[in-house]
Image (cartoon, rainbow, N blue to C red; front, side, top):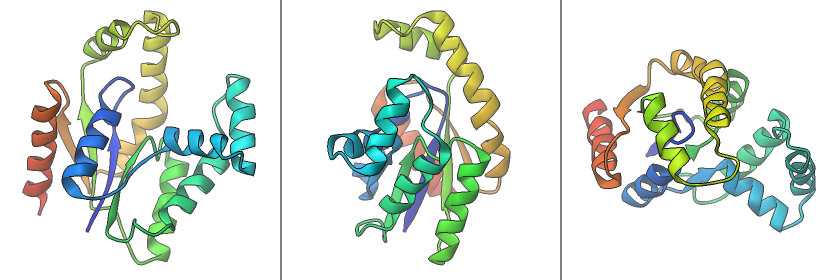
Length: 184
């Protein structure tokens, strides 16, 4: 069984690696962004709430994000494992995840940290050419990540696997898989 969380700063390649690792490991890739979009598209009650927050430029509150992730983890197809991308983002969400797993007598196998220097991430994100990706905005997101998400690294220290996230996609994927094999 493979139950993983992928963490790293915005622009570290989490989504790209999550997709590659999900395929190689044969487990579903669960992204909070994808969950938000699916709920909005299906016009669920949670989706309506998410749409409202996003339209106002606000972060989706933890309670809504937690509910979506817990519902997804309870769906068929996650019994043999999963790869979470974008969740948990803070200690409160990590506590919700821990309780959900404990309730079904499960635990995380590893938390994979993609390590990428901030200047590399800034260059990557600027090269995407998105209008909202100014250097100031990108550096602010990095600061938010460090203040909110970085404490998770200590929370998960017993299952944390740090991997160099710089290189081509296949190279980084192989590094992650190698680091996971070394843990077992």
